[in-house]
Amino acid sequence: MGLRTEIKNLVDRRSRLNLVRICVQLLHILSDWLADARCQHYFISNCNLIDNSYNVTNIRIQVMSIDETWLSEWFVRKYMRKCSELCSDSVSRLFDDVSTSAKLLNAVSSVIVWRQNSTLLDLWCVLHYAQFNIPWCVYVNSLTVRSCACWVNELAKMDSRFSVYFTAVAFQHVAHRSLKHGLNDELMDISAMLLSPFIRRRRCYNNSTSLLTLDKAAKLMKFVANKSLGTMSLIAIELSKAYLYRALSCEDSNDSIYCLANVYLAVLYYITGQYRKTTDHCTLVTRSQNHSQCSSHVVQGELLPKIDDDIGNVLGLAVFYQYLRATASNQQHQIQHVGVLTTELFAYYLNIKCLPLTTCCLFTPISPIDEFRRYEICISDTVQLFIGDVLLLASLKQKSYHKPVSQQSRQLTTNPTEHRTLHLVELLQKSAVEHLTKFRHLEAREFGSAVTIVTTDFEALYAYKRGDYQRCLQLSTQNVHALLNAAEMPDVPTFPEFIQLLDDDIVSLTALMLTVNPKCRDYSSCACIYQLTLSLYLSTQCQMKLRHPVTSLARTLRCIIQVAHRRYPVERSLDRLILKMIAHKGLISIATMMN
Image 1 (tube, rainbow, N blue to C red):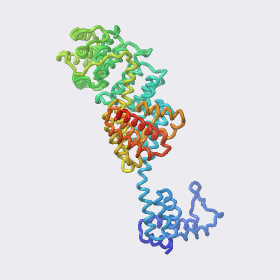
Image 2: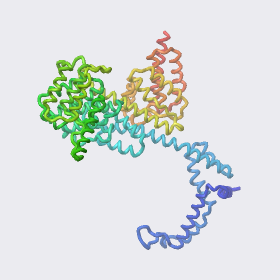
Image 3: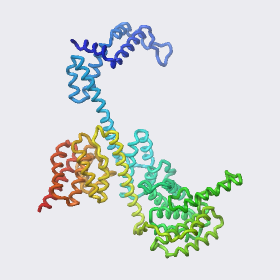
Image 4: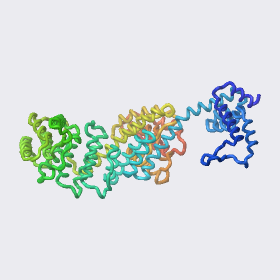
């Protein structure tokens, strides 16, 4: 029985091959169109695509001779057999013998199953490719505000996972450049834009004014308002401080900007428990000699984060009072100055709340009672009071302003600018790890059935960086057990954006590779570390630092030598070098403990 007969029988019995029947019917329709000269030109009316140069009769005879058996055989020989060559060897070999219907059906079904199973793996390969190329592009072409906005907008259209991953890379990029060159305006704007899409750069930096810089700080404060103090909120707070200090240093900064910036700085220091700094900035406002311009800029209640219940209640009552007043006078459209506070008076209020909590400050210490009297005098001398100012004074009179707070004030640093930059870098790195961990969870949720993915590799790496070796060992050991028999797994790039999370040994090893071959960073096999390699490295390092028994360390080294090292191809040079290095260090450590 020939192949043609078997295919015909299969066509007759399998309704799933109706596609062949439809194609044959369409070809026969085309034959009729050729005979009737009905192949009209798309753009030109009354113009047939087939002219007398074609042997239409011969073409029509060939098309009409096509039946389901012939077309099915053509599909098998010219299409399915070619598709099978892309499959595994075990699948492609099935088409060497399709002399019976059962063998043909088995071969075609195997291709379909292989394709269904490989589709998920192919999609993960695309995601894996992006994980290397995103940091590579950021490394080669340093981020600007414009390029960062383009990245954010375009990646959001593709896949939400890319957006999460890029945010982590961008935060690491800003942290790396800040440590290397210091925090500048562009890095601040990039970080601010990643926090909120509404915070954009409006003008060139050379044209930046104190008012525009103050506006950026206000947008970040609004982002923080009514939010818990998570990592992203703390980054926004540090960026707000940086913008406010930048506004104070602008040449066009006036008394109004000076007072408002210092009040907002005091608020930000207060909510993070730095009460001495709060008092210092409040005192700068209350001791300012000229407040004539301060009425042009007031404290906006909507920008204030959670300070205490009094301020929230006062602002709510102020809005309610204005509403009742406008309703009674039928002037709904004339409601003004709702939810605002006078800059100087609010500085007095905040200073009174902080004075009992501070042991010393930059200025001569003042008792809360004396400061409260000055507060009352200032209110009586103020020409135009807002309803919020009056209600805030009333609430302060009803309560003791000596109320203790459990949080402790922090010490002043010898170099405040450097301290602020280092603190912001730490927050950026922490947020990057949180985003990378979130990305791993999204990756595992989608592709966990096709690829072995552990979700705590960056968390373990960050724990090691912070010196939490017990936590790092726990996570790394779990990851090693999950990855030992994995056929496919993700890896971690070693670009500058990621290398700041790694320790000196891996950094030095990467630098040696770049010295030997500067272009090796262009290839993922040389510029990335497998999750298993990283987990084995961290596990071994933590065991040595925690002085674990020799038997425990020996088991890990046996795993490195007997399993991981043998399975890696030659092109994974960085993985192989790391494993050799950690095995050598482990053997030295064992010998030292034995002696």
